[in-house]
Length: 105
Image 1 (tube, helix red, strand yellow):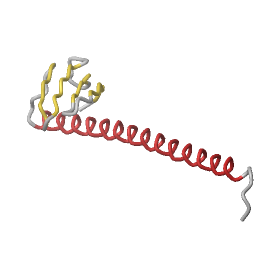
Image 2 (cartoon, one colour):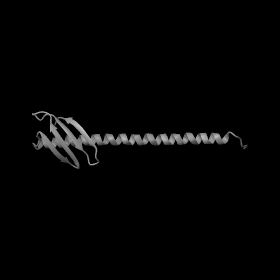
Image 3 (cartoon, helix red, strand yellow):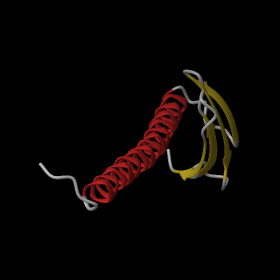
Image 4 (cartoon, one colour):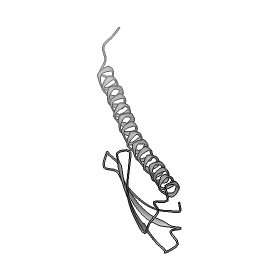
């Protein structure tokens, strides 16, 4: 095989393209993982809020203000009207994620 001046630049170009593809894929994967964690936190907080309000409703603990600990989460709710049909709630998960949601028990 003859050596020529084209082989080294071609190899370097292929190596650069490969490095760019690997770096881009890693970045996309990292972003996807962050989005999945955000979705998991949202659905976990929403589910725990709904379960805590259901337990409070069954135990006849509904009041204008609720401070509930459900599992390792802290839930604080404030009624938006006198009939206790709608609540503005803040839920803080163990990992620090906070969700503010208006809900109807």
